[in-house]
Length: 375
Image (tube, rainbow, N blue to C red):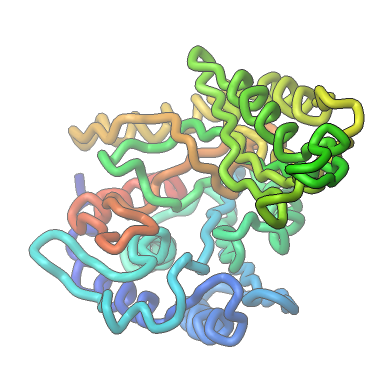
C-alpha cells in the first residue's frame, strides 16, 4: 500500500505535468505542432535523468527513445504515443479542466495521461530510492492514431531488445486492463466494368456498381459472431451520372480479427473474390495492418503479475479484450509478453467528453511503478 500512497501524493505535480502535455496540441500530421511537444518532452525527460535519442521524421513528428539504465535481469519497454486525433484549435472549445475527480481535455485520456504515468513512475523510483528490475526504455511515437506506418519498425526493433512490453494506452472505459486486442485492417477494392447508355442499351454495359452490391453481401457473410470477427464495407463510390451504367466503383472495408487464423481466412476470402459478371474486373489492395494481440501464455503471465500486485492492494481492475488496436499488437505478435491498457482510467477517447478519472489513474501510476520495480 505504500506505493499507492506515494502515487496519490503525486496528484498536484501529476496534474501540472498532464496539463503541460495537453496544452501542446499534437495532431498526427501537423509536424510542427507535434515537434513542439517532442521538444518539450525531450527537455522534461532529460531533466529527469533519462538518456534521450531523437529520430527525425519527415512527415510526422519525431520519435523519442528515452532510456534509463539499471542493473537487473528484466528489461521493460514502455510504449506510448503523443499524437492525438484532435485538430489544432480544439483547446479553445475543450480546454484542460478539472471537475471533481474528472479531468478533461483533447488527448488527456488517449494518451497524454499514459505519458504522464510513465514520467511520474520514474520520478517515484528516483524520489523513493526504489529498485528497478532492470533497464527501462520509454518509446514515444508520433503516428499511432494514423496506423504507425512511420514508427512500426522502431517499435518492433526495440521490442526485440526487451523482455516485456507495457503499453500505457487507456484502460477500457470501465477500468479494465486490456489483455487482448483485435487485429485491425483496411482493404480497398476497385471494380472496372463497361459503361453504356442506361436508357438505350443498358445490357451492353457491365455495371461495376452492381458488382459492388454483390461484394457488399459477400463481405457481410465473412462476419463471425462466434469468433467476433467483423467485416464491414464502410465507404463506397460508384458511377458518374444517372443515365450511364457505372463503369467504375470502389469500396473500403474495415476488418477486425481476434486471431491469426481469422486474419488468414478473411484476407484470403477478400483477395480471392471473383466478380459474378465476368466482364467486370476487380483489384484488391490493403490488408490487416495490426496483427491481433492475443491472450498468449506469455501475455497471461504478465497480466497475472499485475493482478498479484492489485490483489495485495485490494484492488480489482478487471481485464478485457477490445476491438481497437494499438502498438502493443505489433509487439505481442513477435512473441514478446505484452500488457496493454495500463495508462489512464477514463472515458470518451476521441470524443468531445474525453476525460480521465484522476484517483483511478493514479492507481495505475502505482501499478506501472510496481511492474518495473522490486516493490
